[in-house]
Structure formats: structure tokens, C-alpha cells
Image (cartoon, rainbow, N blue to C red):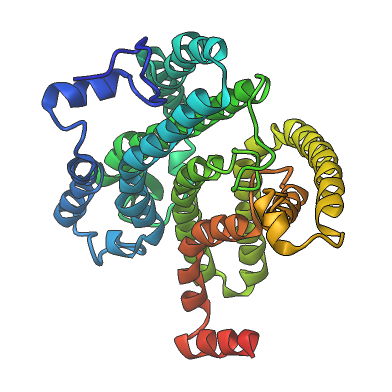
Length: 393
């Protein structure tokens, strides 16, 4: 049963939408593996059937279907990824929203967030109207490309599994029509849907950043209690991984046709990774002012506490009174001074952006992984191993 959109205890961010309702009717809304397999059957398997019939599955054209690395990266790998990530993103964002609402907001602000703001953001991110608008944008794009003849000019008359040459002109095959009018638009819809949801997520975090959050300078995460946000950002990084898969496939095809363009390929890959990391860290910047203030307040309070504690400690312990008498009179425990020093050090190390270098490195590695096959296309395995050893040494 779908949770009520306006429920007081519904912290979910990505519930709703026409396709979600259809999945619930069919009873497969909690089976992302089945949905991913269905996506492959719908978008990729017909291409295998049509190219087999047309004789361009593994030969019979300059670029047969099985050699089209870019298409397989997009439809066979990236598309299922965009389906499978729903549960991961749903769990992490729900946990982050629930924690921030319950632990960092007072009762009045929490009620406003859960009953008013969050339902609005959810409808904006996942409503049937939103999905319809995305579909119309994609249909308009496909119609525009078809009418302009852009599809027929892609290969300049060359024969591939998508096009066949007739009388010197490129004619789209049945497999090509399914790819351009069904498979690719389906992938684009999933990708745009997740990009839009991430944009709305950024808007939601901005709303949180404007609220009077009950941050704690002594929190163990050294981020005032906002360290949990990186969990949600890591889950959203899989959207950009899908983009990495598509771009990597395109770059592999490019480097196979133009090996001398390796520097351009490197720039594209590195530029994409940097852009993705910036987009993932952007929402965390919203909380800088609050973290700076809470750090300053925490240091001021701890300084006052430290002065009082040190004064009492010195008056009680830096004298000639016997140890037994001090313990009997229940004077200040020396361990309290050490605990205070540790807590003061934690506040000094409080991060004004709730992310660590390890978190950033993890994001970079995750987004960069799909680009690794490019190395083995341009270099041999032995050359790659030699370069890795050289870097380590």
C-alpha cells in the first residue's frame, strides 16, 4: 500500500507518480531487480531480435549491433542502473529527512516541514504531472530531430545496424527506429526524472538550511549533527554513475576510431568527474553559515567553561591538601579536565562543510569507475599495470 502523501510520519521523498502507481497495481513496486530486467527486455532485447532479422547483429554492416559499445553502455548497463538505484536513494533520503526533522528541528518547525514543505517537494519531484511534462519534452525533442533530418545525417551515409544505405541515402532500419524512438527516449526519461528529483532534493536541503536547526558543536560527527547528509549525497552519486557509463561508452568508440585524441578523452572524463563532485557537494555549502556560527558559539562556551573549571581545579588540587582529603571532599576529578580538552579539540575540528576528504575521494572513485575500461582500450593490460606500479613507487 502506498504511504499517504500527507501523513504526519511520512518522510519519503520519492513516492508518487504515474509509473509508480502502475507498478503498485502490478505488485512489482518493491522489486527493482524485476523492473530492471523488464527495462532490458523492453529497450534492448528488441534490438537483438531486429538486428538478427536484418543480418546486422554481429556482421553485415560497418558497425554491427554487438560492436556498438556506446549503445550497450547506455541501454544494457546505464538504464538498469537508473532503475535499480531507486531503493538506495529512497532509503538514504528518507533516513536523512527523518533525522533532520526529528532531531534538528523543534516541534513547530518539524510539523511545518513534515506536513507542508515535504509534501510539496514530493509532489514537485514525483507527481504524474511532472512525469507527463518530462515525456512531452522528450517527445518534442525526438520529433524535432526527426523533422530536421538529424538522424539521417548522423553517419553520413555509412551502413550500420541503425541505418542502411539505399541509393546513396541513409535509411533507418527497424532496429534503428526502435532505438531512436523507443529505447533512447526511455533512457532519457529515466535520466531526466532522476536529474529533476535531485534538483528538487537540492531545493529541499536549501529549505532545511534556512530553518533554525538545533545543531550541536560537540556532536561526534564533527559537523554539528549534519554528517548524515553525505549518505544521501552518496546515493545520488549513482545518477552521475549512469552518466559516466554513457559518456565512457561514447569515448571508447571515439578512441577506437581516433586513438590520437586520448588527451581530449582525458579532459572530457576528468571534467565530467569534477562537475559531478561539485554538484554533489553544492547542497552542503548551504549550511556553512550555520556551522560557522555554531562553531564560534561552541568555542566561546567551552572557553568560559574551561576557565571556570581550571580555576576550581587549581584551587582544589594545587595546594598541600592530602589526596585522601581531596577525594573525601569530592573535589573536581582530574579526568574531567582531560575530557574537557578532548571536547574542546573536537569543536576546533568541527567542519564548516559537512564532508571529509575521504567522502570526496569516495565520490570521485565511484563516478570515475566506469571510465576505467577506456584505459584498456588505449593501453594494453601490461602498460596499465606498469603505470599503476610506477605511480605507487
